[in-house]
Image (cartoon, rainbow, N blue to C red; front, side):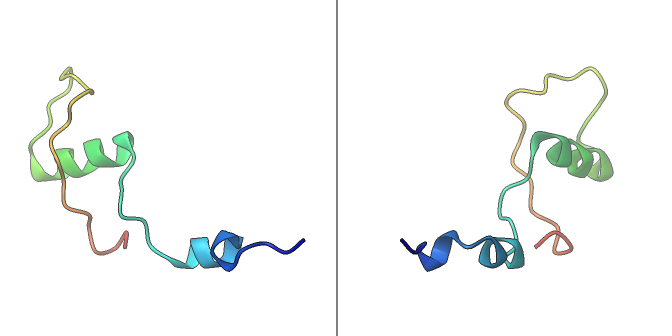
Length: 54
């Protein structure tokens, strides 16, 4: 049985991600000066994805 073309690993890795992980979002917020140590990690504000990660 063959796999569908969208499930191939190579096609997934060549595309950029459009969602950041929590740690990555905190790093972006720190760079922008919108994050302080000790703040709640749940309910983070939305962040723009840097073009270097796309």
